[in-house]
Amino acid sequence: MKSCPKCNETFPDTHFRCPECNVELVQLTVQNEAPDLVILCTVLNESKAHIMRGFLESEGIPCQLENISFHAEPAPVADLMKVRLWTLKEDAEQARRLLQERESIQVCSGCATEVDEQDEICPNCGERLDEC
Image (cartoon, rainbow, N blue to C red; front, side, top):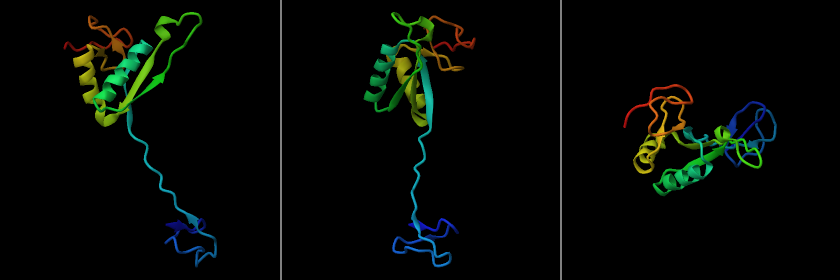
């Protein structure tokens, strides 16, 4: 389809000029909607994040990593080494369940940060953690 840039009327691809405005028509572009992504969790270990991503992708759940780390040479600053694991909104619940079952990873429901299994309260946001 083509459209008139002046009056926004649409025409079939066989038309070249708007009959009303006498302006050359432009091709309409279909803009695909961006997928609805959510942060699955924040991992404090970059290597572990890559392993988690590989595991989830092997289970058919697409993931992306976002490195939000601050690297201080020669060694990284411990608390600033963070990687966010992103997935599609519709896959998030299943992905969290799989990670908890297979990887023994506990994720805070308040801030989606990885926490130690023995933690009762999230050290990042103070949320009380559910017992599994």
